[in-house]
Length: 244
Image 1 (cartoon, rainbow, N blue to C red):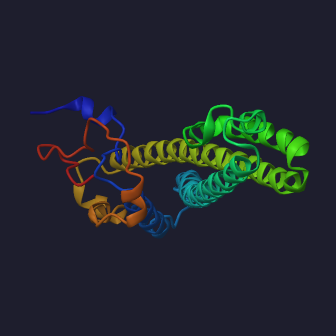
Image 2: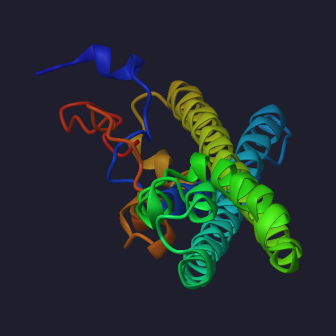
């Protein structure tokens, strides 16, 4: 059955096409297009496709970098939180031995005991450390500097981890936009070239190597899968442009 509307759809948006495959296909397409550009008739197409290719390739690299930074910062935050738990557990033992667990001094440090620290949300840790430092300045001045450093370091790693997540999210958004731009440009190229060679499907191989869209996915693609798209690229064998 002839489905003319498929010619109006965005191609290269299949969930089966990985980012690595799309970049490889585009790089090969640019080389083939250049070989057929002896008269300069494809200069505009080359310029636009190259720009879209470079933009998408750059965002993939930025995404990987941002993700790595985010993971490292998250690990640093989690490690420091464990150090806080260890240090405050030791402090609780000191207070218990020196003042007693029911004492005013102990309660000023830990009004709800260590359970409050263990079950605290990350956003609540700074306030707990503020209280602990303030109490230490009154009752254990020799420990105040160390606890202050513990608090300062927590603020640093917590803020860094938060900004790391934001950077990764921003990189993902940029990647998706750049990918959509490249898919759109490639679709335009297919339609423009098909219009030039109507009823000559053998000409498609001069410009495109479709097999490059069906290679194994890279590990980076599997870790951040592409969003699924409902329709597959144009593959209607009843049409003359079956190899597009």
